[in-house]
Image 1: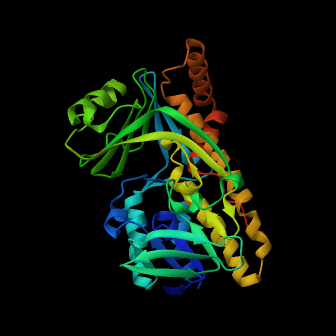
Image 2: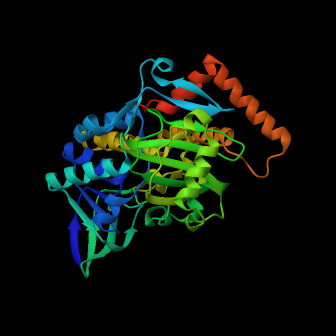
Image 3: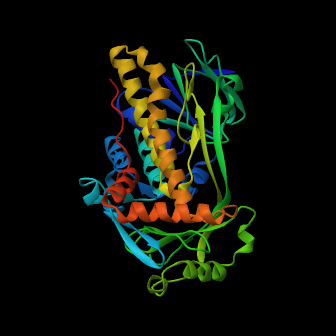
Length: 397
């Protein structure tokens, strides 16, 4: 078995692992990333596309913001389609100038992969049987297989950025974590199409037939979603059926502007809220989907991963530069304060805009009244806006 050494071992080469690796590399801290998939698989995953201001700033800090700043679309607001009418949520004016950036997770990942390769930092793709060891010791290590050889990787700390189904969280004894979860009785059917977006801003539509979202990746590429029952499959939905249903859920004036075309990707994502506490065990730290999942309604999944990255990066900076090892045990509580606020907002947006099959008439009227109250009140719109653009990152003192 060959032995390797690094300062920070990162499990997972998705956006959070790559971003953490890039920030640490720029700070002179050595990392090695282990990824079980191929580079093409990682680069091809279709995911989120709305970046909070905090994540935009973090990507710039990591030196990977150039293409984003050229090709990304800055959005000052979004539209709510309620009762057949569009209501504008002016993010910029309601938050004192904050905006969001439309730039696909696929593009973020490609930028980060290119930067890591250019820096000569090591990512081992198709790493098999990754297993952390001695997490409570001063010298944790991992075993894995790569290109038919077995390796031992010694490190100071391990960052688990390997998603909901990854090995990092599963390496923590179950008696040391508490899981909070809610599974929703529907999913999002999403398609990607080479068609111009229906509107220059995102449109969130509440309709008696179910929720719909009109999004985009560029001025020529659209991303649309429909709420569908949890048991539905992609095979149940032809392109024509999707477009017809989308039109039915949008205000007539907006539906008339819809440009349809063949889908280039189609998938169904189940919706769940999930948090594990704590997000650390010894010298293992969980980031992103390994520690928390939000329904995509509030555009918070990727952005929460970025705030985890920011927190751990800034703690590690102080550990290596100032010897502040006392900060390590604060990682979970700092992250979780922001996570639970984002979980609340994502749950609220989901509850307000979707049709719940088990909801009685009273519950439906209450949800409708609450949504109308927030939308009709400037204070309510401000609450929506400040959550949507992202709450501030907590300073590491």
